[in-house]
Image (tube, rainbow, N blue to C red; front, side):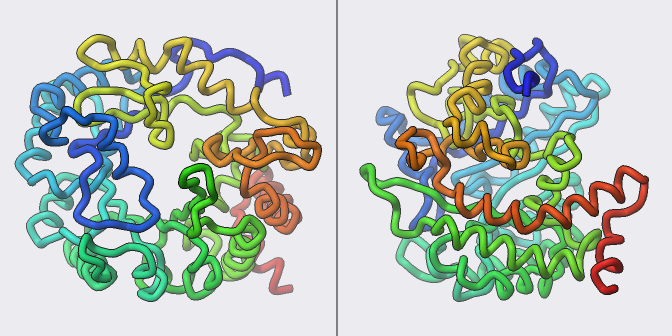
Length: 393
């Protein structure tokens, strides 16, 4: 427990900055999207396009801030492909200008509707990892992910995925779990297997509108049931073949090693976000004035991300937990999950409980014996996939 209270040693952990080359601009109007409203932070902006000057300043500072020999650039939106290919070609040249022998990798998140042969050839030629936002089979995806004029987007997304496959581009999927698709866990999971996607991430939607829970929020206990149903299928058939971020991260926490995802880490604060104009914020989910760390024209990325303000933001993840969480048997597994979701009270009336607490607790209770088995296999240098043969017996 003591390690949770320690202060960050300077430069002890790598810095990740999500980059917004076009700000809060998108060709879709997903009903649950929390990000497009961020335009309101910049009422004087004529457009939300990152200038070449900001781009170069960021790339130089970002590479200088890294303590590792490999540097990962993460391009996010809005919709990233609303910037043309010339912009990313310039970015690649600037990356190499300042690389100084480091390996540079790029990943980009897109809704997939604007993918073309030219885009996919570019991504293949330049080793991009492409993340596709898709919420499952067509009836699930089109529930909320629609165009500006209300038309469904599933067919265009699937066309984009097929183009990525055609050119051999490495890709994974990011799905939002909401009040609708949470009722179709196996159909949801099998859809991704059917399209031969082996790296699957999904995240529960939890938002408030004018202080009230959004109607598309995933119910907490249904979230737990959703995870359990998919886990029971995965643990019997797919360990070592399909990689689901939640399950991999849970096993990592069972092993006592970094889970690879900030929401399930003991502390946070290493993953910031930079807007189109150079403003840096503590986290993609905390793009609010009170969480602004500064601007790269006035401060360095290193200075902002290792500032006391950002360190305290990271420590707050543990320090602001209610007593119920700190005494929970599964604290080591969820660490209170994302602070943005801590919007309800405990039975004792203490604020700061995660909206999804009941669901997570249900999930961890269910998977504990399976995680114990896989942990022992790893400790004995055997593959965790051995659990599938064990369960068959």
